[in-house]
Image (cartoon, rainbow, N blue to C red; front, side, top):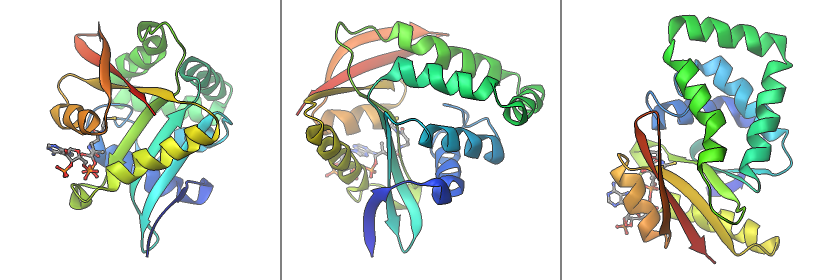
Length: 198
Ligand SMILES: CC(C)(COP(=O)(O)OP(=O)(O)OC[C@H]1O[C@@H](n2cnc3c(N)ncnc32)[C@H](O)[C@@H]1OP(=O)(O)O)[C@@H](O)C(=O)NCCC(=O)NCCS
């Protein structure tokens, strides 16, 4: 049976694997499996972060991560990382293997200050669907699931940032009804900030 349910600690292995496959070389996917699992474990501890997954026969084939407050979530995540020696050691090991991780991490930390809309809006941080199952409306259903969560909280606007080079992501969000509100660049990459009214 197919279902969308909240992601919990027992799913972090699958979530990290799906993340690394969906964003090759980007968005923390240079982290090895173990380190990315740690990051997902920490994300699950943040009360303002909503993670849900689309499961087919208990296998995670799609997921979405949304935060009610991006800058607060990023700050808390960074603090949790630096206060956990085990994760810091893993991070340094990974930096030795892939020095680009320094830039990726830095750009993530700077990101909330670049993403300057007047109003503070909830934000989709990640949406990913296993390649084999794309174009089957799973992304659409994950978006609808987040929207129900936001509506329950009486929230009627939210946003997402998508890289200009990600043409599929751009088309997907356009189809979902998002409208472009801002463009910004960092480290030679251009991002479009899109907003949707529910
Ligand atoms: C973006 C992504 C989540 C879409 O998931 P999906 O389950 O394939 O999307 P859906 O089947 O729900 O597509 C909904 C609509 O989006 C548009 N769309 C989705 N993929 C598309 C593609 N490859 N080309 C053109 N339009 C596309 C279509 O309009 C589609 O409706 P249609 O199939 O009736 O034409 C998926 O491609 C993915 O995981 N990409 C890698 C990660 C990523 O880039 N995430 C977004 C940035 S965070």
